Length: 554
Image 1 (tube, rainbow, N blue to C red):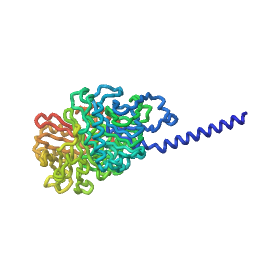
Image 2 (cartoon, helix red, strand yellow):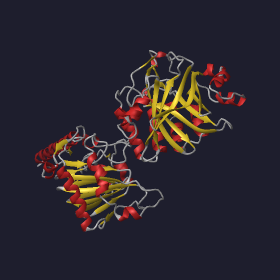
Image 3 (tube, rainbow, N blue to C red):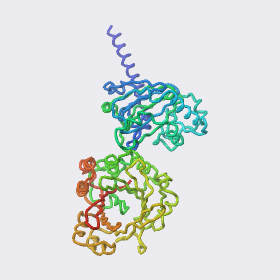
Image 4 (cartoon, helix red, strand yellow):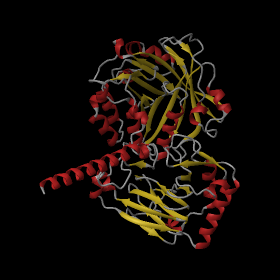
């Protein structure tokens, strides 16, 4: 009897290990499925979990969650509040649309909506979509059994609509490659789809709501994977059905989320003089301080990211920064960013430098159009003006608005009498508006001691008044270098290479948001090694500050 029990125990143990090996093998084979679908905070959707199957053995924390389950059939819709996790399985060929929005529905509880559209409107929307898909000869389809690394499978409309393979999905999302967003379809959606009454009449603020509409067509079975979005949403099934499992935001601690920090904020930190465009190597002896190893530091790109999540009102601002980073022609070439504040209005400026500070030469200019990929913002004519042969820097603004790229751009040139990139350096700044270049500023860049010593002379050259108050302002912060500008008659003063404590003082005195200040204070030691650079603009009459900014690289 004992021998029999021992044999049974051994057999059970072997079975257990076989199950464990199979389970873990499946997990590691599919480990990257959600990772490759995951998007960071630069987008307001598709923040994924590492959980990729309903397997309590591999993911026991699922036992602690509170899921809600829904089935949507034709003509039914579901309100999914922001931050609610959702896992959507499409068992058959299905066509659906969704709406993402903010500040419209005053609820944080999911709810089915069975009368979003009447039958006739539902039929009309569906037929318009299918007719367009059928007539177009080129659609990029995602093979969802694979990751998002490729440009997708190319189908004609007719071929895709007749496809019955699993895991073939037509979508209209940005963030997954330039083709898979099917932008030609997305542009049509607002023409075909009239907003439902619930999104017209339930607005809870005075601003015009921003509503994003997307299309989802599966050729057969499809599994989205477990994820959440940053905006409220309504999912509406036009044809077919969807099985949806929701988890409330407070289940996040059990759902193993991926990090949503953008890739640019995770780069290796470096010491750079941003406005001089000079990267200092650590072994050069010029880095002012070190804080442990690189793992105990944070890069200046993290400061940019924190400014975006604290101050940006629209995700499109974060998305634009991400696209600029991704579209740089040379991944190793650094752009310079500035975060600007006037009253409580924030904007960001991205600078493209066109000189080699190491060899004291101007280099070939990178066309901004290749970086922003937006002809509406930068035309060919504007690009030519921005890239004048004396241009050493040009820049674009990112506004804190839905349409965050505008038609106003900037360029900075050496003064005619400058023969090289030597100190003191004299230059002019221009705004480019309506295809015309307008001079708006003149500046002198010098090391701190020289600029303080020659403050009166430089002010005279810049046609600025000089007195004891101005002298006091110039010495407000101790820095490595300084740049003094006459910008439309006002004093535009830059302190370049100040200490972390002076940087914190600057943020507090100029009333930056507490969320951002707290982050800098809490991570003071991790930012101590950076060359912090700031600007304060003073009114020419009262000498009162009215605008400010700080800088980093991207």
